Length: 359
Ligand SMILES: Cc1cc2nc3c(=O)[nH]c(=O)nc-3n(C[C@H](O)[C@H](O)[C@H](O)COP(=O)(O)O)c2cc1C
Image (tube, rainbow, N blue to C red; front, top):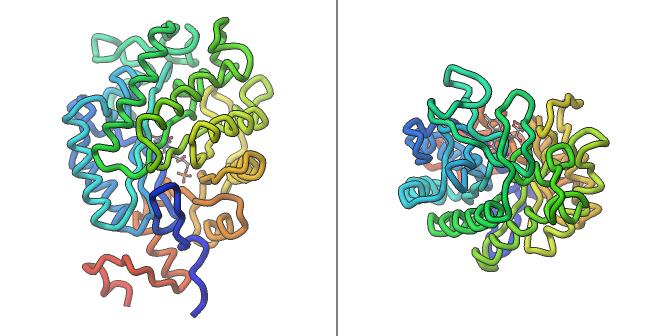
């Protein structure tokens, strides 16, 4: 028998062994229509399909650690019991299909309180329509959005606490993996990036200072969840401009995150400024490969990975330890099973109900 493709080698992070290396990245659904941050049947069907489709791990969308941390009023949240219970039901289903359950904990900073793509309106949601004043390192707006309020030291401490509290709730809901969102121009990336952080205090200026918040969040989350659960951080490895956060700086920050108990870096890029950058198949894979090599930490690659052979090549050649399949998995939630079939691999987790489709 030929060995299993690299994609189907299990991967162990702390106490969790995950059945394969094809994972689903967080993808906002803007579908908590009651605006209470509580997951709905849509989330169960959406996330459940990926678990059924053979993914190793499924990471729930950016989930606000506070109400003000949501990107849109329809985002998920994890600051109360109702939200925790709704997620626990989804985790239970994911586990029944053999997938690991992950969740991305997020604070959207100055990019919070925006219209969901399915609601009429664009830019920032005004207060009278259920929006709120956003919070950021500095009172400087993202182009086209409302001006945020500069966070005080007290405000910063409350957010660190909120990340730890949500992580504890995630653990109680049964999640196997916690991911902290420090990418895409949201709060933690806003602190990291000189494009959005103009603070004069201990949280601004030098790289050490700009990284302080994400490091404190990682430390607080790790100390709250204990030693067993893998902790991931999603970074925007570069702002795609010399004036912004650079890959070299990110490598340094990742080294510090590693010292604070982060196990794997989910490598994305950009989105803290409307800067265009070259997009093509696997466009962010070189960033994941650099971080993996230079910071000596496992990475996940993401971004236009759409073909089975392409995905296998990334993991087999050691450019990343895991691939995340986003939009291709929206088109085909069974991408992992299709990939297994492509390589003539027969995983033991074909859903029995679907066996006849794979004979
Ligand atoms: C509908 C949709 C929602 C997304 N929501 C999130 C999110 O909640 N958090 C995040 O970090 N990235 C989010 N992303 C980015 C994806 O996780 C992924 O990085 C990106 O789509 C590139 O991968 P792909 O080419 O495989 O889709 C979203 C992407 C899509 C298409």
